[in-house]
Structures are given as structure tokens and as C-alpha cells.
Length: 268
Image: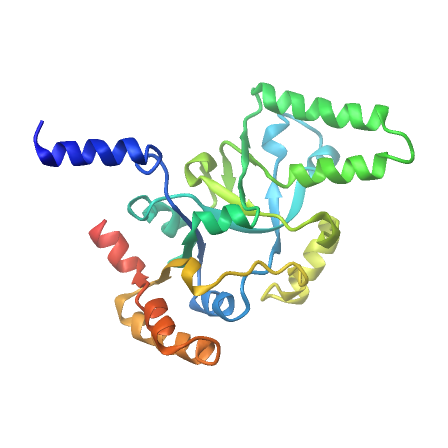
């Protein structure tokens, strides 16, 4: 075995996971303003509609409505830069990629993918029934809150993606979520959610304002814009936003992490 192969074998042995998973968590969005807002104000969870009805099989309308839930979250995907193209087409051409170690430190976790024939799905439904039957008046509220907190982390293996109006395999997204602690979460009904969304199209009324998810420049690996010609504009915006907070070298390093979806799609 030549020297190059020995070095490669040594590196794989030392880092057995590096070739299987990404070390970056990407948050992808559809406009530059969202990225600028994150750079200026950090992440704030927003309530997002999630349809879990496909996990129940055939149910009546009343039961199905109870499985349209509103999850307070910041969503990320655990995909390498070379495998993120499909995600960009589905969710937008702007994003920010952060160190996975930052995500682990802040309690961000993979979602629990389930399908309707899985034992985990049947067990989860059984747990809910047991909670209702066996909890006392003193404990049922707390137990149900914990149950619904975990429910915020469930995702169907596959299903209908409303924004693209097509069936997709959600499992391919390798989604991770930040769900704020229970004390910050408000239980929204469908009518309350729709009323808030209609009232304020920029989703400010759907924001969990007190549950900020912060990061530092050293946590950032990539800042993604749509086109190559947008990179300079983003550099200037970073200097305006962060100029009073960080020194010149830190700003330059942060600006050097800007890449474009155009580059990712064409060269990876």
C-alpha cells in the first residue's frame, strides 16, 4: 500500500463519521432579507404548520384537524454541501450553515421520522392513550405538555409538501429542529394560527420572541446567496450589521464564508 493510501486509511480510522454525515447544519430560506435578519438578530423560532395526518391512516375530518399541528421551531438540514441542491430547489436559494457542534451544544436535534406501519408510530399513539387513562388531575396537564413537546419533533417519512404541491420523501431532508423550552411555547389552534398569519405576512406574530437561538461568527461555516453577483452586496451588509460588534479581521473572515447557490449547483 502506497503512502497516499495509508494516509487516507489513517484519516478514515480517526474520523469514522466524517464520510457518512455532514458536520454542518444548514438553515435554508427563500429570500436574502431572512438571512440578514438572522445575522442581525440571531434565530427566533416561528410557528410552522405541520401535517401529521398521514401517520394516522384513514380518519374522519375532526380527528384529522387535530393532527395539523403548529410547531415553534427553527429548522435545519444535515446535508453536505454536495448534496444540498435538491433542498435548495425545494426551500429557497439563501441560507446559513453552522457548525454541528454549535447545534449539539444548543439542543438542536434530529426529528423522529415515522411511517404509519412502524412499531414506533403505534407505540407513540399508545403512549398518548395511556397518559390520558392513567394520569391524575394533578399530573395530566404536565404529562400532556411533555407528550406534545415530543410530538413537535415527529415528521412523516414521506408525505405531501404543500409549498411544492407534490409528494416527497421527507426523510431525504435529514431535518434537525430547535424547539424552545416548554415555558416559551404557546399552544395555537388552527384558527388562531391562521388569524395571526393573515394579520402579519412577515410572520412576526408567529415568532416565539423570548426564545432566541444565538451564534457567533466562529460558528458560521457558510452564508448562501442565490447568485454570484450578490456576494459583494452581502459582504457590505455584514459590515453594516456587525461592524460595531466585531473587529476588522473577524468581519473579513465572516465575509469570506459567502458562497452562492449558483456555484453550489454548477460545481458540486
